[in-house]
Length: 198
Ligand SMILES: O=c1nc[nH]c2c1ncn2[C@H]1C[C@H](O)[C@@H](COP(=O)(O)OP(=O)(O)OP(=O)(O)O)O1
Ligand SMILES: [Mg+2]
Image (cartoon, rainbow, N blue to C red; front, side):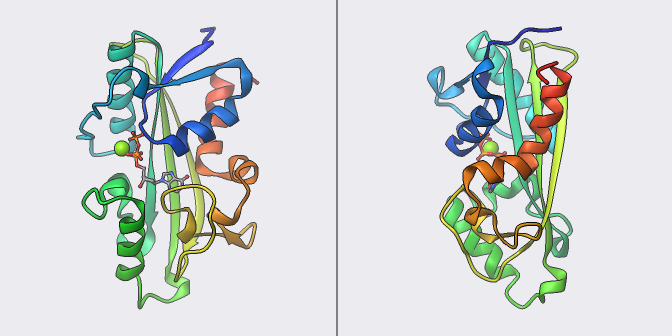
C-alpha cells in the first residue's frame, strides 16, 4: 500500500482544493500546484480521464511529488452532454458568471422535464510523472438545470444545479452537505477505498 502524506493537487481552482482537502481530512495534506507554478497545462484530451491524467502528470513533473488531479464538468442531457470537458471554457474563458449566463441562455426555452444534467468528476492519482498505472476514480451527480441562479455557496455551475434529493440548488447546500453527496465526494470515496484510507 502506498502511503501518501503529501500530495500536490494539480488544480488552480480554489473551490476544488477546499472541497477535496475537507474530504481527505488531516491524514493527507494537499499542496496546491500554484505553490510551484502558475502555468496551467493545456487540456488537450477528449475525455475527463485523459485531461485528469495529463494534469496529474504535469503537476508531478513540476513538483516532484505524487499528484492528484480533478477533471470535472457539467453534462447537460438536452445538449448531448455539453459543455462536458469544455465546461470551464464554455464562454471562451470569461469565467464562471459568463459560463452560467451562456448556459441559461442556451436552455431558456427548454422545459423542466428536459433539463436533466450530471456533474462529472474524474480523479487521477499518479505516484510520479511517468507512472504507468494512474489510479482513476469517477463520480456522477444527477440533477437538473434551473431557470435562474440560486444560492451563494460553492463555485462554478453550483447556482444553476438543482439537487433533487435535497430540493435546493447545489449552491444552497452547506459546504459540508455538498461534500457528502457531490460527484467529487463519490469519486473521492472510491479513491479513499483504493488507497486504504477507509
Ligand atoms: O462541484 C462543482 N460545482 C460547480 N461547478 C463545477 C463543479 N465541479 C466542476 N465544475 C465546473 C467548474 C468548471 O467550469 C468545470 C471544471 O473544469 P476543470 O478544467 O476540471 O477545472 P478548472 O479549469 O476550474 O481547474 P483545473 O483544471 O485547474 O483543476 O466544471
Ligand atoms: Mg481546467
